[in-house]
Image: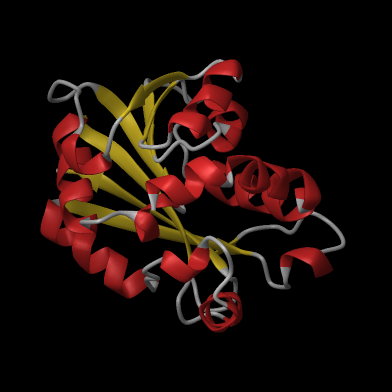
Length: 206
């Protein structure tokens, strides 16, 4: 998986320019639950597209090529995995995992690590392509370059993993009601899930 992103990092990053309206829809949905202040970490920061736009200053990713771009975007990046975070306990006000949870080797351990590095009442924000949505079904059938190795989740499954890790007080927002290349304008996020292909789940550390 790491070699896949190291090999095709330019293709990955270019998607956000090609599908800019879809990207802006995703940012708007994440913005509904993202804290307005505080020190944030993005696990699976990739090329830093989301971190830079959302004001997240710290990231971790296993792809050397990806983090080189993230660093150029002003992100303080560490090379590593979400399953073994090299940060002290109670370091961050919030942790974001945007699309990356479906590429992790052990999602439950990633969430436990996120819980550990969060401060009390810290927030976790996870964004996924909903496995049961029209978009999730399409990506699973298409077996695209990146998603053919992904393990998709629906919001209920991910909420179960978050509960197991100790999180509570969940909220949900959705967007992408059309395929990315068919979107004509930035869509307004809606509460809940079940209609949009892109779902943001937020929870709180007890």
